[in-house]
Length: 474
Image (tube, rainbow, N blue to C red; front, top):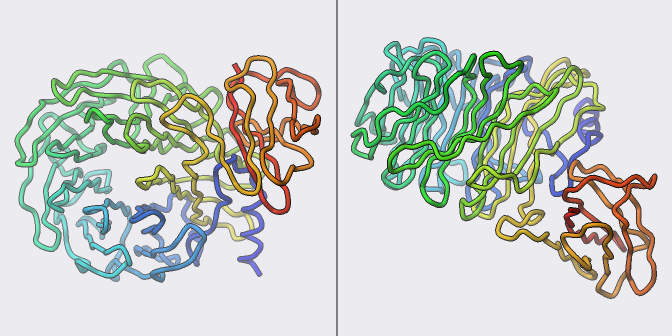
């Protein structure tokens, strides 16, 4: 009965168009709000999840499931019977998953195939102790080797491992200090972002043989604080892109920053700071869209009792294609906290995200997953995408439009009304037909107030079938 109540409370929150309702992805809630977790996808929709506090114990759990909740590999403890936490993961050759965690000071790992079957058993990966940040960040190359960054007493360590064999290379990044790092392998380049000095993020590039190709480059100066949250990828030109959170000297609050580095000379090409007025942000995540000319950005945001999972789409030059909006809006829920966002993307551009959600009924936290259908946004065109579902579809008379637009229904069925939603998923206007399957919208809300410029989804339903088109108001 309790599980049903929790599910019901989840579905009361608001999710934006294109995003699924969230599902609980673990059998037992955790006492910890900072329950570390990781997620990877193999194929189009096979999700591999690892998490700490497995069954309310300091152990690491693992399972494989589909976005509808179907379990393909049951919940299993993959750590030893010892204190375990701080799980991370990476794909290996796109068809298997390497999982990492700490057991006390040492780091351990296992490799699982797409079905969840064990390829490399639970094994010691790193014997070194850490100073303050236990996470192992990792990325694999085309040979199936694992490239990892982690902290040791001497600074940030870059290391290469053969799964099931052991370490084959190690270097301590020159001038690094402990606490912060992230890593991304692209072809024969190994990109790392790390903390070079107090509040000074830096970039360095290695080749696959362990030689430094680009020496340390300062990414941004004048910072008061640089958090340990970061995420990294590459664009279609093989330039390094990262998404960070920091605060500037003399400036109140933190900002999120998209930074692009030229992978040849190491010059900083783009530095776009994203202000989030009135919101406290955490867990910035960057994911490549198909073609790597655009990127998904995600993060958690909150202010007092209101909590959100935010989403945006940005091009490789730092321009927004989709302005930041709440993919999941918990502002009306009685929540304890949202925490520890992790996300992954498949080759089609579908996003799968997990985060911790507080539940006042149990006094603890569930891990939930929500996913985004890439068909809701065009990443290659500036015009909107029409999602066509038989037996009817919607088409806009002009897109983008300035003052008004007529939406025409094509097909054997015509819905009784169309509903206009803003980018947060809030219904702002209901449209009645004007004849011949046409619906007129004057760009105003239900009270006659002119709505601001931006993207809007217009949807209609008939006989259990829904069709949607996105229009842009200038």
